[in-house]
Length: 107
Image (cartoon, rainbow, N blue to C red; front, side, top):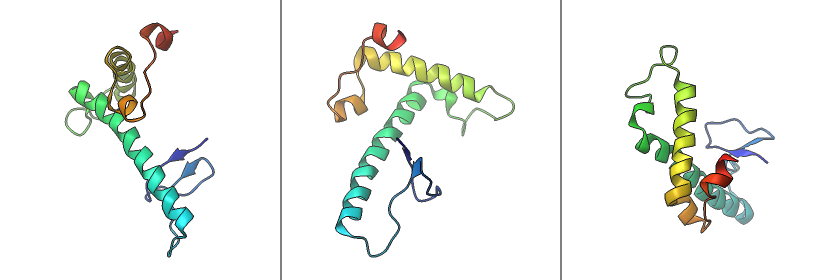
């Protein structure tokens, strides 16, 4: 299991980035394209939290060191996940996966 980030991140065992070798073999092009689509869908989840709870958009309101940014974000993410359990979201629709019930999620 690993995290997939953009080219700004260093390449590590558990942190993967798009292939950087030029020219790219066909297999590497396919890998970059497939992983890029997944990376975008993960960004949708962060967007869901920010759009549902505008006050956690640190660029506008929160100051690291002056606000409990991490705690507020975790609570908002839990609440957004509960909303997803009730009404679905873009990511679950994209992958054609039904979200769990509230009971399953909070169990």
